[in-house]
Length: 243
Image 1 (tube, rainbow, N blue to C red):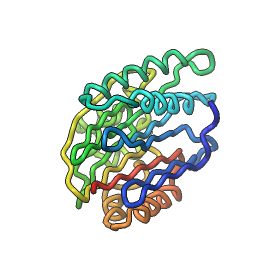
Image 2 (cartoon, rainbow, N blue to C red):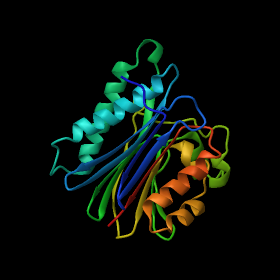
Image 3 (cartoon, one colour):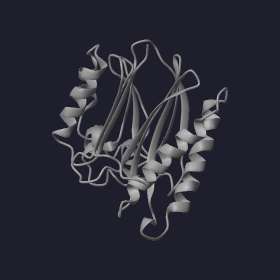
């Protein structure tokens, strides 16, 4: 597999803004997907885990397998389909995890948008948000710190900078947990997908403020450049605005 470029950007006028950058690291172990599917779109972000370049192998395996498995799979229940594909990705990564790649894995958050419905699947701590005049939805992290928040040990703000925030309780190729749900959307909603190198360095209030702009490209670039000034990690961001 050839190396992921340091910066990749895709923009579909007024509909999708997607970009990935190595950020504060020499190598980018994130990957993303923006793909038309079954009359709508599939958006996904993967953040690879593991040393010796294993992280980028795992994230790219997840994105390629997701794209390949979705081809021709129309008129399927997206909830069942995504559960099935996540299981296949998990098995595929485990097969690759040999030698210096032993223990590699990846997070993966996927949104299938069809009209005014979004089916969201998540493993790990890459996130999907739905933003209106505020954040109305956010995926649940599979992490030790998320457990602390849910048990009242930490606040959300404390969790953002906690030293254990990167300890995951699930990742494809390591421990398989998949949460999938379908949500209703309204015109003007913005779906935001991001790796932790993005959302750990910006508040939800700041996200909402940037997304008030009607220009999706300006909103995306503003968010991205703000985070790049502070992040110590790879950064991947996808925005989709519901027509």
